[in-house]
Length: 114
Length: 111
Image (cartoon, each protein chain N blue to C red):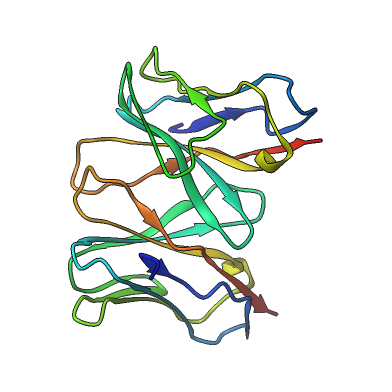
């Protein structure tokens, strides 16, 4: 089954404690991205990657890091989480082939930073 | 002016009604127009897409794009309680470009 898998689904952590949210896709997609979704603000792109070893900032990159060492994986790293990073996070992937840019989303990670 | 504007709702309609969801946009270069549906505690899923102007129909769903007015719509006929979700419009300029999402409209279909 084609899917984007995020882990963990839920995470409560304390301010300053480094954490990583993993994302993996099994569709051999080139393009992967991370979004955060907040009430009243919608989906905002954090970082994206066009392919292995190619990453770039989205609209709200401050406080986040990413890496793309393998095509299927795109982890999101919070080196020193703060309460304003409490949010619902989504990883998405899409192919750079085909006629339409359909994005496939993971199930989401609800992060609470206290 | 934000690139994509979408009324957040919530919109509550009785079962069987026709639902109209809309977005306006400011960037005339957008060519790919999409509607994503997001159920509670799930990730968004692509529902329909269109390229450039015109209509597209898929079962009970119809997507319309009016590029002259910079306005897109999603119509749901014979609405069902299972249609209750948040609907996000989305757009991009070219196929490999960043997708810009609206903030989503929460829809409740009342049995």
